[in-house]
Image 1: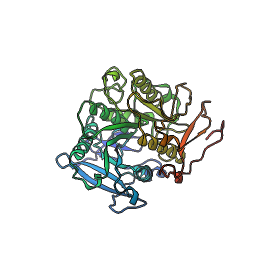
Image 2: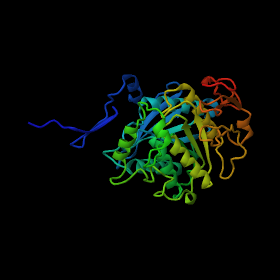
Image 3: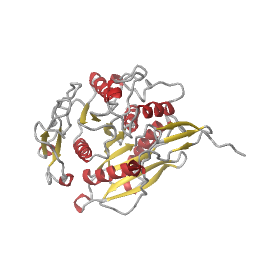
Image 4: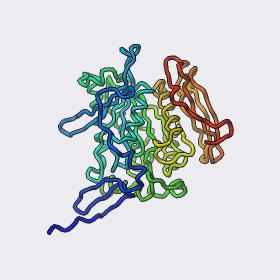
Length: 401
């Protein structure tokens, strides 16, 4: 009789590791959260203006990608669209590119921002510890570089490989930084990494930060999840100061020596990781790197289920795609200064050109800490960018969300 296998690690309803090395990722937490992890199959036909396809980028490694392709209008038929390379989150241990929360966010983004999105099916720990996911992320970028030279994927024929952006949430934000670092050491031409967008990246220190201790836990981030996922994902014997989890730490290459693209850092003021994320921001500024912040006030880790936070982030991403800053040129944008409890100067990057500036309206409010929040809305019909369907709701000056 074969004895029952035993659980050796159980992580907050998300993952169970057994003594035989097998892993069960069946969701056992609150049922109201389960839908976001449901798999959405690809569809070649356009649904609400977007089609999706899964492709094998590398038959040898099995690297898979999901492509989101917006349906072009007759006026756009010859236009080239910006391309986003997306890395999903999940503490390097859970999540998939076909999860509903990503499908809902990126189909909407592809449709409204007129962008092609390529999302990577990353290998996951503990079966595949880091740097496996980072290798997958960079392999996907190299594949895009090969497509830029000689396109064999029909769904990418309309991509502007001179406007490729890296984007990722949570641990995917870590992969944005790591991929940007690797890209800076390679000649990817004719592909150009025009910008990088880490969303609430999972940057940590060995010591507990104030935000880790003070901010409330959610089903999407607890201290147990943070510690256990990192322990399962990092190379054996590594600490939280590994360059992939602490890119501003002593074990990482000095930021001032790296060639990095302009960066838009998307944060939330109730995120347990906020303090170390802000430490990364300050380190980037000190290293004279181009970086700006979008702050979602009142939000915690993983904003995908909150309409206002999603609306605001999509708008900011749209503006970044329309007119990302060139190196040493962040002075011509349209910005809203803000202030939160850390008293850092924040801004929403609004691009450099008059085309973008004409379509912007600012709305101000107040964070719980006493600082100001704000977001920018692109007016419907301005210069062809029709984002009126977003229907943003804002409090009046001095109000709160």
